[in-house]
Amino acid sequence: MAMSAVARETVFALRRQIAKIEGTLPERLQAPAGAVSDAGMAAADRTVVRRGIAVARPDAFLRTGIGRLDAALGGDWGGDLGGGLPKAALSEIHGIETRDAGAVAGFALSLASLILKPSLILKQGPQLPVLWIGTQEVFREAGFPYARGLHAAFGIEPEQLLFSEAPRLADALWVAEEAARMTALAAVILEVRGNPQRLDLTATRRLHARAQSAGRPVFLLRQAAEPEPTAAPVRLIVSPAPAGPRDTVAGPLAGSIGRPAFTISIGKSRTALPGQFILEWNPDERIFDERRIGEERAKNPVPVVSLSRGRTDPAAAPGAVLAFPTVGSPAAGDQPSRQQRAAHLSPRRAG
Image (cartoon, rainbow, N blue to C red; front, side, top):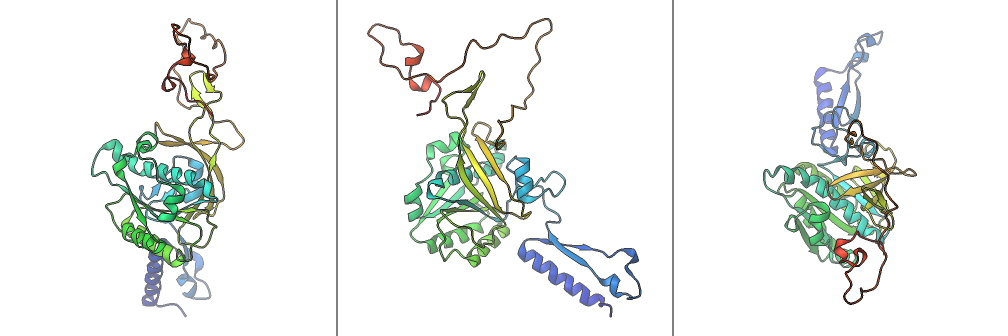
């Protein structure tokens, strides 16, 4: 017997309500025109419903700028979206060991820099701050981000990063839930340690629902934690990657330390696509660059001005550029050599 129109609309309304709670939209696929057969109108009433992000706003995702990573995280939904981290959602950033806390914090600050970058460039509207919440145990173990280095590395002013130190995890969760519903914050960062029992599926569902309601991202930083069921649609495992040498006009500078690098592994995403990426953070342009695993870094894609006609190619560099060795103090009356000048006038060295 065919389903009545009233009952069918009731079912569709319930499905839309459930999809709204889960943060997805149902897509209704109509039966083909030739579906009506001996079964009468029953075949015509059949509707295939699949869940997924049907229509997303252009600003619904926080794109890292790495196409392969963004597509693996949020999927290529068409248009110029290109996927990425959902902005109005709870996202997990894991550190497998305690010593990875610096890399996890640096990656979270890089994401916060990407969020604040448009407002800093346009200088329009209020400069919303980022709230970082943690317990005394977390801050005692991992410490606080260095305020004077925030601007140099991430373009974040010290007054744009607020801290809330809670004595217990229950207090930190309460502060995070209240802050997640506020639109006066650009993002909320909650840092916890291990796998506490209080941070269960119900607690993460509340954080995810508050983030969806406010349209702001909530980043859950988990230090030395094992993966467990949560309401976060995305889980990234972050660890430090070896930094490459510093790039110069003459090529990589041997013995130097280049940009900070992160190894990113996808533990959970909407597309369920696994992947591992090595990202370098460019503090000057505040963007990510990808370093292919097992391959040399891609060359700078910026086109170079062609040589003038009638001239030969420039001569090669006279020799390899090396880091300056440590030398002793100059003798009295001697002019200090280039190697003996102040440290801030020389390239940074390893060791």
